[in-house]
Length: 439
Image (cartoon, rainbow, N blue to C red):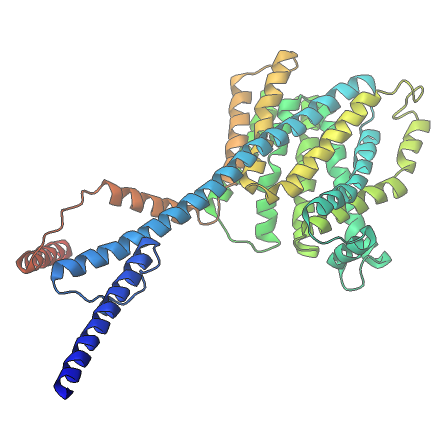
C-alpha cells in the first residue's frame, strides 16, 4: 500500500507540473498576440530546441512591432485630421486678410478716412471676450460665470489683477501700437496697390526675428538673417519698380513702418507680459478695443470738424464696406490668435503669405497694377524670406535625420545566415570592413 501511494503521488506531481507548463505557455502566447510580452526575460521561455527559442523571440518582436504600428496609425490619423483643419484654416486666414485689404481699398473710394476706419475696426475688438466665453461654455466642462472667468483671466496682469497702474503701463502702450499698425497699413493702401502692401507687410516676420534677437536674446540663426536680408532687398526692389516716385515711396514707407510697429508690438508683449492663454489673450484684446472706444473717440470727431476726414451725413457712409472690413479683420485676428488650438501655427502663417497672390489676381483683374520683372522678383523674394522664417530652430538636424533614414532605406539588406559557422564568418567580414574603413 505504501509503494502504491508513493507511485500515485509521483504521478500526481508530474501531472501538476505538466499543467503548469501548459498554463505558462498559454500566458506567454496570449501576451505575444496582444503585443505586451516584449519585456518578458528571455530565460522565462522554456524550450528544448534552438529553433523553438528563435520562434518565441520573433513572436515577441512581431507583437512589439504590431503595437508600434497601431500607435503610428493612431498618431497619423490625428496628424491628418489636424492637417485637414489646417488647410481650412489657411483658406480662412487668406480670405479674411485679403478680403479686408480689398474692402478697405474700396472703402477709400467712397469715404477717405483711414483713422476713422482704424477706430471703427479696433472698437470691434470688444467682441473678443464674449465670443471666447461662448466657446468656453460649449467646450469646457466647467461652468464659470462671466464675472468669475473675467477675474481668473485678469490674473494674467498680476496678483492684483487689472488696476489703473497696470492699464496705463502695460495695456495702453500696446493699444497705441495696435492703432498705429492699422492706421499706417490703411494709409499705405491709399498710396500704393494692395499687392505691394500685403507683400511688404510680410516683412514684419523678419523684423520680429531681428528685434527678438536683439531684445529677447533669442537664438541666432543664419537662415533667418538671410531671410531678413531678402526682405530688405525686396523692399528696395519694390521701390525701384515704381521708379522712386514720391507717391510710391511714401506708401512703401507707411507699410514698412506698419510692419515695424507690428513687430514691436509682438516683441514687447513677449517681454512685458509673456505668453498668454486663449482667455487671457481674448480679455486683453477686448480691453484694447474698449479703451480705444473710450479714449480715442474724440479723434474722429476732431477730424470731422476740421474737414480732414469729412462726411456729409451718417446715411451716406458706406456702412456695408465699413462693417465688412471690421468683420473680416475681427475674423482674421480670431483665427490668428485661436487657430493654433486646432492646427499648426505654420499653416496659419502660410495663410498670410498666400494673401499676396490673391491680392495680385484681384489687382490684375481690376487693372490697378502693372507686373514688370522687377516687381515680380521683389514680391517673390519677400515671400521666400517669409517662408524661410517659418523654419523651426532645429531644421538642420531634421534634414540630417531625414537624409540618414533615406540612406538606410536605400542600402540593400543582406539575408541573415543561420548556424554557428555563418555567424563567425559574418563577424570576420564586419571586422575586415571596419579595418578597411579605418585605413
